[in-house]
Length: 136
Image (cartoon, rainbow, N blue to C red; front, side):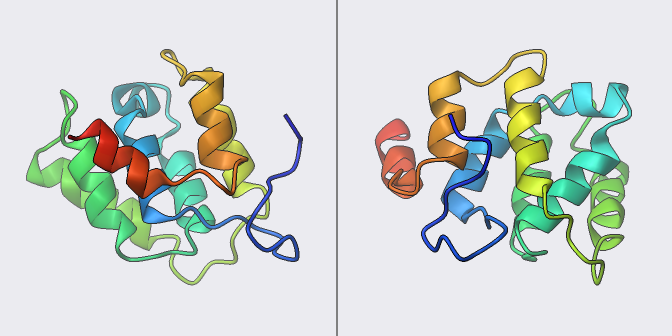
């Protein structure tokens, strides 16, 4: 694996995760571990930066995290919203996608290396087709 992300446009310095890849990634993130380890704020900041602050990401984040014990309350949803909006207007870190990739590989239940590669390094990976197949 390379130490830099490949994108459809090699001139782009930062990868922007599309909604299909993001949906897969968020479905596999150990949200309770993020909260317990004190990493939730950093994770959301990296997610905000890697997606360019796309407002469509917040409802997906809340939906995916609501599946975990300890999430799903109005208070928790408000906390996620507050954390997300705290990064609006801030310059994104250039290594945000690299940090997300690292978390996917090192969380208590890491994603398989092939999935991490598909999500972050393979511009030909069709996340929407994968989701259609997986959910059929």
